[in-house]
Length: 437
Image (cartoon, rainbow, N blue to C red):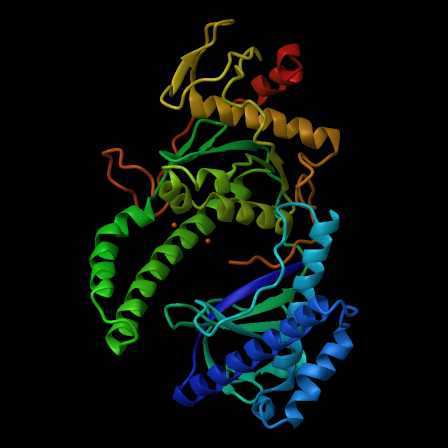
């Protein structure tokens, strides 16, 4: 399986200038290739093949006075930039024809030097790891890397990026074998929300840390200072970087917290089931800031690739499944309920339910049914859903909840224990009211 390891790098002044040249050349080659194909399409000419495009925008362009400076950077950077364009076109065409499942892929767009993220990608013949612990990049030099952990194998490629905060990163793609954990005796279902970030099927609740809400006061002050600066001035550029660094801190804290929580859940359970949520649709409502601050999609992605890495079972339950309407005790469907109803009593058996806990137990039962049926839960499911030891792609890199009068909690809150639902969940799976939904 492929994994991506991300490390902070610290280039010197001359290396930053060399990286800026590499970012610019890669961007120009990408844009030239995109324009060539757009112009051919507008003129009703045949599609420009990958080989012909490389000869046109790299080999031939280097011989012209306008593009002679392309020779100042490694050719690997230019070739890989064109390969990214080819991949973008293939994804777009596959999405149009229906071969690529999930949200529709947009056609490639022109890159800008003002984009918040600049990057170059190199294969094995464009970089190397030196014995002194530094990363050598062709025509850039040896970059100082802050190694937070050791790589499990020799990397096959590296992507050097500069984010909006001016930080440089090296992201290594490594082919490695799964790290299978000892078998655990429990399964769990997870109901994601806003007041409680996650509620597990055994009753444990994880409070939402609300990282963006905690930083709002400082962000407001910094953004007001940014708005007062004259456009195009150096002071505005400095203020913009300060705002970007603060947003980066918020994202880093959220990502670190979610990594620790997802690792703990995967380690403690043999199978993990989670209900899919339409974060894109919820992002258009008054809850938009809360939804983006929660970062559900990033958390679910972590659970998915860690389950494949450690030999666990993972499956997604479709959001159309009525997890909040079904009684987890008797399987009776009690109908929809408004969001302010957080506890309800089943009309059939009289059981009093916590809304989120009941939903998590129903997600657990439905997830077991999906795995037992041996199928993915939706047409848009990942190939690794419901399977173990599956090849997964390298993970890629996502802003509060409404104020409820409760203080925000940093780190992972203590998970509170609950009752064992394994035996009850198996009974619910066999009930007619549950299987007919």
